[in-house]
Amino acid sequence: MAPALPEHAFGNQKSIDFCQQHGLEQGNPVDFWTEASLFNQAGLPALVLGPGNIAQAHTVDEWVAIDQLLKCYAIYQGVIQ
Image (cartoon, rainbow, N blue to C red):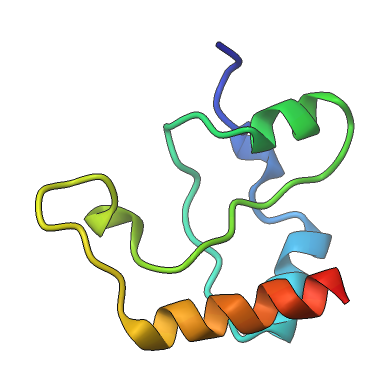
């Protein structure tokens, strides 16, 4: 398994710009693994972006608000286009 997305990737200007452009709050670095770390290791800047709050993720009674899903959908759609 690869290491977590490195903490030094937090706060880079491209990430900050993306978050500001989409009205997102940039979260703190996380201590779990995602495929984003593989992209980062390959020299490709990566963000972990999804709906919900990480404190609610992968727990008993996990849930995501509909407005968070819709906002995330709109961002994904914009990135793809």
